[in-house]
Length: 227
Image (cartoon, rainbow, N blue to C red; front, top):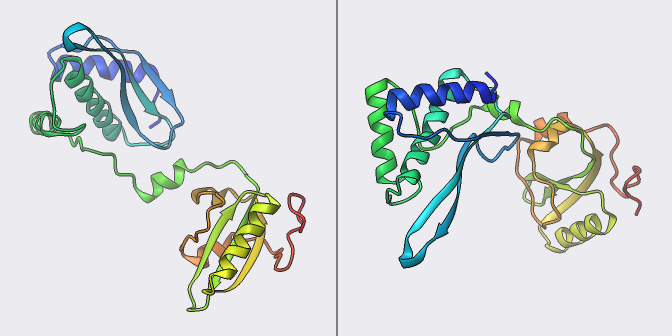
């Protein structure tokens, strides 16, 4: 299911009454397309005289990028409510998911049959669904090493960056060949694009299945690059 604000607010009220004795004040809910988290409890901090620390402006943030089962959505909401409860009451913990958090999590799991975890573990299908599907043109380099290994590298369509990458790898003495493609297949969005002198080792049969037929072994002249 996809998250929306009314659903989260309704579940917050339900779990606040059932699990937290209505001790949590209503809190603003925000949605995003973030891929770095599923749920997040944010707040601001200010320090008063004599060292007293105040936490305020709490917000619960959730990503709509993943299509999760309802039970996992509920567990994610409760997870963030535990964070909210601990910080709101200025309870000291050993870490973000320390002794206090784990104790509360385990108690709620035991009492209410939940499956709250420290971190959300996505399935392969969920990760595939969360990938950016927008076409983005970039250079794909297939690097063949002298020991038989193959890898790939994604770079921006910038002539100087691609040329510097090719020179650096060929100077290493470990590379037998580098072939180039200019691609916009969204499948490649799962790999980072950068100018760093590194290689990504991935299942090459799957990689080659998404390469176009046009290979540029000696030059890159595909609209965005000209050597």
